[in-house]
Image 1: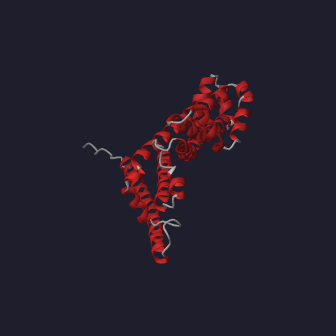
Image 2: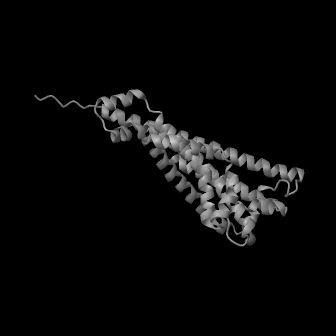
Image 3: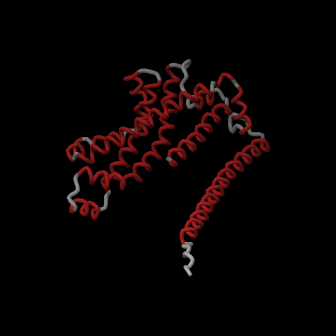
Length: 271
């Protein structure tokens, strides 16, 4: 009489454990997101209650409802200005990531370039980025292109410095192992340096994502002063409606920019 085949239950147990771990991770993620949303909602509710209870003037501290009310006013042009700001942020950020990573790779491959040009980049990084705005406007004129350049100038250096640091901080044991196995320079780069530098690259991209939004706001302010009738983004509403004592518009401009900063940074971090 033939013996019945043995059934290996280890595969089923492993699959069940993986499903449980996946469900637990989703529950933790949902709980964390719920806590974040709840904190934001509580702060907004306390803000509205404080303004209503103490009767604070709108030009000192506008309420959230007053800020939302500005969305219905056509003179703010929120959608056109938001689209312009998005173009500046995405264009400047993409340019900063491409050139930052590319130049860092060149520095890691060429010691001569690293010795001659990298100190110059370090010196340029010490220059206040907001001071470059008027110079870029003088050199390139007014328009979307100069604002993208301003955004790029502000968000470029974190990508460059973090990428170069990641490429240089490689475990010596791994380098010795690849070289002992007669690995080429390209293999050392693709198998050791580049994978080891990815956390540094992503860290620089996260910082640059926040700075790109600030660069777009700075570029829009300079553009507003010279060409007030052109679409210039949402950032210039802060000084414009602040000086005109339109607290709701000014706060909504910066508040909306803060939410955009948060969403933009989270999107980059997920990538």
